[in-house]
Image 1: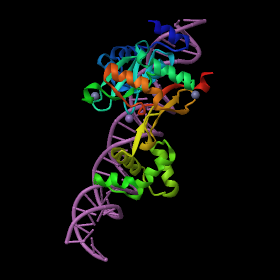
Image 2: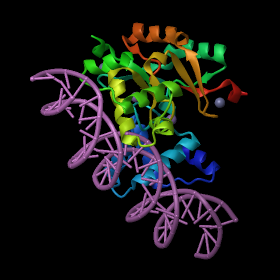
Image 3: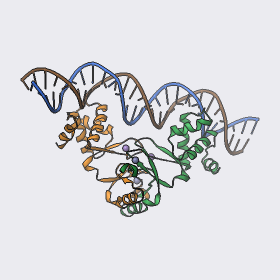
Image 4: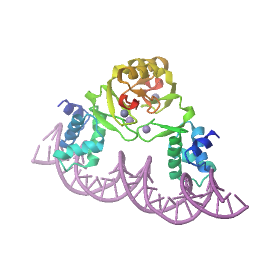
Length: 135
Length: 135
DNA sequence: AAGCGAGTTGCGAACAATTCGCAGTAGTTA
DNA sequence: TAACTACTGCGAATTGTTCGCAACTCGCTT
Ligand SMILES: [Mn+2]
Ligand SMILES: [Mn+2]
Ligand SMILES: [Zn+2]
Ligand SMILES: [Zn+2]
């Protein structure tokens, strides 16, 4: 329950709903707010969708959760600990593959050297065509 | 007017509205549907927002225009000829910088070699912190 | 030049996703 | 336990995008 501290430090509280949202995100890997709500409701049907949105935002501010963009709209949420890979999204079949961040190490270095730009490769997906769809 | 052919080949028509949307996109560099509408309306106030959406979609299908994601939601449109750079979006100040695609050449190659994944680096922005904000 | 058919437009309504306002509820600290 | 304030549920409001439809018009054919 390290999260208890993270929250209390900033005057925030650990409510059942907040805990449920966090563990849903952890269980799901990556999920949209709607998917998180659905998951939480499997055990606690009363939880409101706006509560999910608000808690995702709060958990993100505290650093326990992070969002990325895998599709053409919306956001999907990850547990912060788990966001150690980048996402390969196929525009043809819609599949989402993972790859270790180091495949981008060189690229990130280039941007830093040439533009002084510090890149977070996980925030947006890498878009293209997957191996299966290329054939 | 090369676009005339692109369109007619597929049974589509070149209407004034369509032409206006295309030249607005070309003039603006990158723009949201709303911004395109605003631009077009400076000379032709009657144009409907849904017409702009429909034409952006059509022009994209024909290959004259392309969309990218620079922000947390929505899409922004580019003229296809002009989409020869990638976008560096700063999460702190919101600025959008350009960089030639070759800075990603090595990265793209890695993904191809290791995963058979063919990357389109222009579709999603590269997210991070710009030089100005790093200091 | 006139006519026709299918693509296109404007308009309003419909939708989907996300955010707000508010009154009641419930963690936390003292 | 009392008090303070964050948080929740709920419904309404916003924002961004898509639809349905009748009227219109581009581009092709007589
Ligand atoms: Mn897209
Ligand atoms: Mn984002
Ligand atoms: Zn695929
Ligand atoms: Zn910046």
